[in-house]
Figure: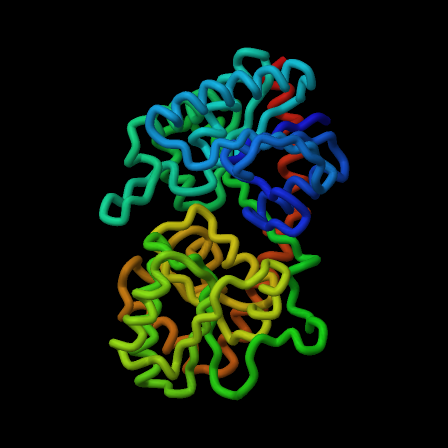
Length: 381
């Protein structure tokens, strides 16, 4: 089968992990199919190159906005149309429902190619106080509307996003199909010697997230101030970087929890499994997640997540714990409750591992997408 993926970004070389779940999916699909990737915005260059068994066309959109964005969209549409006419894929799969979904649906309609559009981020939401969400932009709203109305099938990664998408997509075209985790990389078994990122006793909590407003790391720190007052043996490890780094360090000082928090900065993707395995449990404080791959990565390493009711966290309960968004007291209470029983984090971690093994591996995703691609090809005939 010939599969054309359209995505905002893709790895520029072997060492680049800009969107790990997309790269894992492309690599897995390319083992059995002919795969072409159109990367709209990143790498920040126009290029064609082979990677992970696929051919990648980087269209070099970078951060173009306003009028320059419209010019880019027009040129990108023409470029994709030209390449697809030559290559004739059997199916388009857009990863994100704004620009990628628009291109997949409009080019697919022009050439009679069926399309799958996956809602991968905040395309359906608007959080104006932090400037997050596709629904804040007139152009994005239009792109998403065209994509979701015209797609042969639309997939989402969690029940919460399924409920959001029901307002846009008819039930017969909508399905919950999470992107699974690569269990060859993320697993509970010990890594190489020296890979453990910290040593010492106590309880180690881990938050893996970019330091950006939608991830709301300040709520995790405020919850940590409550938890550490009750449990002085608890330490929070924050993995990730971003524009909020300096303000979060100042907040840590203001809360008086410097001794209980370590900022590790950005960590290479291949080193993350060691961080998950070294933690007792994981924390997630996001205001919004469409799926939350970090929750699945932790689960594949037999670690549970206590976090806000976003993405897959509610779907995985009772193996996880979900609390209201933006409520540090509720997050602290949930963390305290799980930590009260020393055996509970391990038991919940085993339940998470079982959930991944039964439903959320990359192998599950590939099999389900292959079946979906075959089905949409039949629809298009």
